[in-house]
Image 1: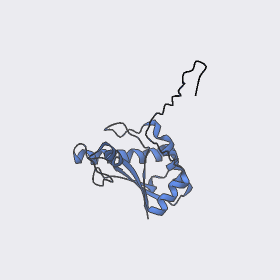
Image 2: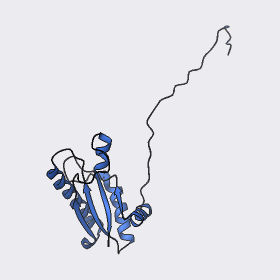
Image 3: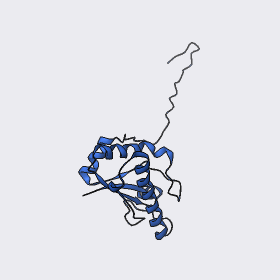
Image 4: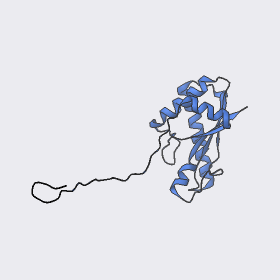
Length: 151
């Protein structure tokens, strides 16, 4: 495009590259359907302090959703399964996963009024990986909580 001085002018377009992110809104209806259809569901977004069973406050929206599912179906009985990656000793991982499942169970009972008889907690440690433990991404997928429908 000619300019008044006889030269050319150029436009520059800057394109920034970023990884694609996907955000899925977890709601009670979708969670309830997944539990009914599959019999179990891995729930992401329940966060714990590293090597501890203390639930981080930013987990509350997910915990609220789980409570809504339980309150919406009074006959629903769940086993809360804690899973870890394979970093560390297997016995320690199993203990930690049990403590985390217990902490989640107690939280739902104490904070959301869910009957204790409707929830059990099991720690499986690193015994049921869903991804290879050879990468950070795989290990992150293996650190999870699963809700399993009982009865």
